[in-house]
Length: 433
Image (cartoon, rainbow, N blue to C red; front, side, top):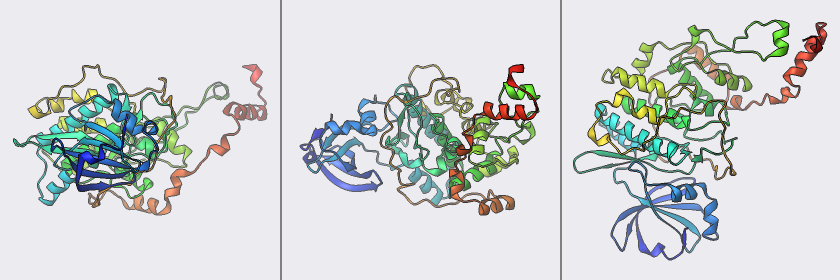
């Protein structure tokens, strides 16, 4: 439980680290122990310590067990002005975005062993929150991955900012505006409200590519732009094809969708995504992406085939086919990883992403879904040219509102009723079958 008032005087505020929609983060020093800490000051006011319990981040951080790759919460208290303070572990090297940007300024690519260590620690943090804490983060991005570097040069990475996190036993619908756009999974871009922890793994895949190239993989400037950049790199997840059926079959079963194998890209087939796109009046492109083009975008010959295999496994369109964090930790890419990446991981079996027939989530009311700023730091858009002329023309004809079209108004008549009307018109009656 947060304490009221008296802890504020125990800290000397040294520096402002950042400001966001939630509030601000400060570097501070404990006057009693001289320990340097980070203090997160929430913008929202709370009348009492009991009222803090309705804040999702507060509940999750208080209940979370320690892990070497997750920023530790030391204390919480309310100031005399009713502001909630989180006293947290301070990491002295900033965040992963700053680390990548520094390498870019120096024109120095990140060594393969460093990439392995960073990626492994990211996956270790996700394995813990997904399978031990039963939550998913929903805002994985370089700015939320904090870094410290020891005297011997070894790098430690820790996951921070659980303001958008959700419990895995939560019930949909979830908000469709989660995570920074560049790291947002396709199921979220297509307005699915039934997503789960695979969205965190998609974000890891995009960051993996960014560690290789020092540039964002999908720096979209709108949701439509984001989708087309993904398709230009990974190809098509399929298009709708109606299989021919007899009149009797039409009355007795639903239409089945499939796609010719020749149009499926590196991201794999995703039938559910095709249906989501249809509801928005959006159709996937028919183009495929040759594997050589994907390697050209990565612009690196230093990444072994095992690394490319892991990357493509993280960037599967279908969330049910996307590799999970525990399985990824056992991937052959990490067979010879740096000893610094050898961490104590929970002894749990691999768990696959949720299948369609498994129960889906949330018992408590969805809370604290305030939209965050896209980024606390300015980002320079710099990436390989991924667009064809036809793609640009298509983007010019579409707008952001295209992804918000609601076609459900036309679904007031059930499918069976529509088929019954069609049967009567054709001289058929359902009682014959």
